[in-house]
Amino acid sequence: MNAQLNDVPRHSWLGAPIDARPLFAPELAALMATLRGLAPTDWAKEAVPGWTVRDLAAHLLCDFYGRLARDRDGHQEGPGFAPGETLEAFIHRINQEWVDAYRRVSPAALTDTLDLIGGQVARFFAATDPNVPSLGVSWAGVDPAPMWLDSARDFTEFWTHRQQIRHAVGQDTDPDPRFLSAVLDTFMRALPHTLRKATAPVGTQIQVGIDGAAGGTWTVTATGERWSLAEPDTERPAALVRLDAETAWRLCTRGIQPDAAVAHILIDGDRELAEAACQIVAIVY
Image 1 (cartoon, rainbow, N blue to C red):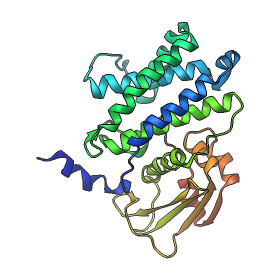
Image 2 (cartoon, one colour; image 1 turned 180 degrees about the vertical axis):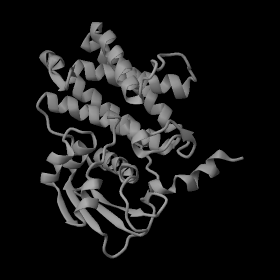
Image 3 (spheres, rainbow, N blue to C red; image 1 turned 120 degrees about the vertical axis):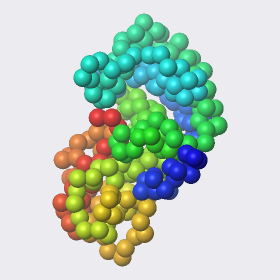
Image 4 (cartoon, one colour; image 1 turned 60 degrees about the horizontal axis):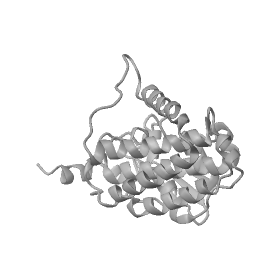
């Protein structure tokens, strides 16, 4: 049986594949420029609740090593689930254990190691087959996920953490549409899973539009079995949601909560369906 051919129709509801592979190397270069430009006092600033800039940089290194160990090297050892532990609790626990251990590592050594290992991660992704089955993406509701979605998910995490570091030291979000457009496109693949409990007649559509150079339009359709990003657009969706790129990525990563985000979102049509779409989240949360 050909697993690759078997998986393609099963994942068609996720929409057209995203190729984030060429973006890992320039994203790493942008991260290095950010970290090497920090003042000594910047490393101790809070980047996310409970973690400093240095903590978040250490977490990125954990992600880099984890990807190489698991998928490049086939390394099976490592922490396991505690009895009764959920996926979310497990991930948060092992992330904290890594960050705690790396607090003894200097910012300079951490930055150099990120550069070295991040380059290996970029080369790993560049060589992957985007259609083979890979690690599940829980917020998209697919396990295993096709590699194109798994790799795009990792790209969004690396990019998001870089923005959190930038914000911690007083810099704005990097507006480069090469990166942001791929991030937003990936995040929107959470829409079918977000709407899994929303009932609507078959053919009902919700359209999400994100303004700006990195934005676009995504239409999700009720098919009876699930909501799908693969169906053709109709002339008039049941609900329209429009928002700016900054609100969109922060909503998907819970830098802003849905109730607060709605104040920055234009909704037209069926408000219940639109607000259901605004519950979108594209991280393990």
